Length: 358
Ligand SMILES: Cc1ncc(COP(=O)(O)O)c(C=O)c1O
Image (tube, rainbow, N blue to C red; front, side, top):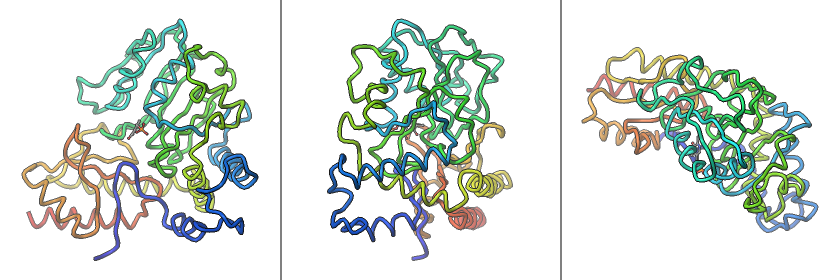
């Protein structure tokens, strides 16, 4: 079989050099005689790994000293509840629904207080981010929640509305580190690691310091951002092996030239695939061009009766996990940082050959 390319939306492909390095360090990390999995999280070896991982992430995203970086468990879905518990108390918050994940965030947050949906593209089948001029923003809201890359429908934000200093809380699970951002535009950035960062089990929360200390007394200690910030993310045992792999991914990304360099590759990869879809009458993508995700590219065969044959043929060529999310059907190619351009070239060649044959 030819080389394998894994287009899974998450858990997703990791850089091959990272896996090779993890393999070589699996039994004996740096002469310690221990696997990272076996180390005390409070020992000097692991605290060193954690400090380096945080420093590299700060460097990659240019995170200012007025932000805390937390390494938590529970994934992005746990944070859906922890955001209101940490920030809402007695106030209301604005939420934009631009896809399945932000809709889920609204559902999860609604148990904790007053949630206003300020924009909703569901009636439009999540094909674009609603024009900011239509958003019903509240200048007194505790925060505005957005999901800046909707993994299922492939809708990505390129900018943010003017919130008049209401802090923006962004779920960046599926595009963090894929493009340059200005962290200072956000109050909180969070994301599950299992797409662009590392293995599942780790959730990263980047929170502006002035937003700490507002939590409801009902907030569990392990999810209280201030308590975790005061304890170097060690109120409980952090997901140590996932953090270690994330650290290797950050080192790999720095070796590639950082976020600005990988962004150029991501632009080229996405263009290859969208150009292939747009040039054909056989495939279609429904997302407004300005909001097309560079990371998650859903597409449909106009003749859906060919879906199974398409997936079977792709798999035979080593092009794996192209089936669309069960909520939206069709196909989806997730082309995160770790997907080499050769993977997208192979997919495009297969799509063109399949179109020819049918
Ligand atoms: C944008 C986004 N938010 C939230 C989630 C849920 O993340 P988790 O399963 O890590 O809680 C996902 C998972 O795919 C996602 O893509």
